[in-house]
Image 1: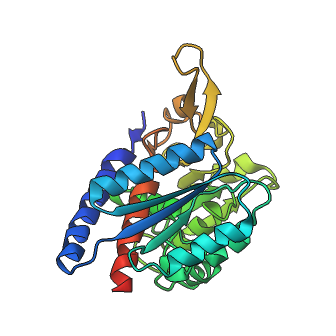
Image 2: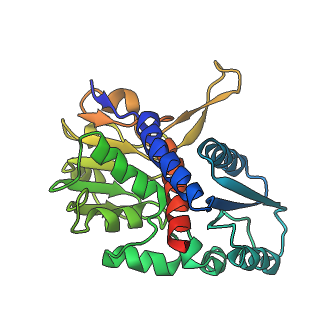
Image 3: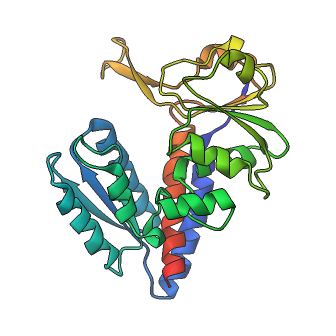
Length: 291
């Protein structure tokens, strides 16, 4: 049976570190502030924003929340971002994705000043990540790296196979883990929907990261014994045996894969808490830099 990599426990360690930094900044007269903009009422997005607010409150970070209707004109949203960019108390700006139809994600993300882009998705910060320069790293990839290092499964010298090429997880994670630095130095292969003979590639992985958005897509026959498996997926599947009528599962068939993997993250309780923790860390970093 695989070791369970406890994302909640590791995220708790990081949040303790963040809390200490917040207290240090407060001594210097600075309280980190995070502005979160939610457009529309997508249930998953509403839930994520609520968790981010809760984390801010627990760590002493000031949370500024802006809820806008789904039919908000793009210029109005851009105007709010420009206003927050000029607000000294706001050190980080996050626009919850995905955006409703009719809004340009590209224009919205580019409107956030790079120094307040705590999600690490501005083209300037993406470029910095690729060249290995100090920058804001997207929260989920940063959280995955911390999970690996802190659980004793460093990617250094390992073959990491990333399933998924999104701008939020797959691409930045590949760029992060191939850097010439501690906690990286991996050989990275990125697979996607057009990859031929996918299982032949995934079976070569020392570390497999699944971020495809398909429930239980990765099965036991797709990994080799001793592989470390990081499950990024969060999928709702119907389950009439529970009161809410559904339960959350990952992109990995946990029951089967956990029998042969060396270590595996659960869903929930794996990557999710790490994403929130890294957002808090990026916000504190932004506040420190803006001092």
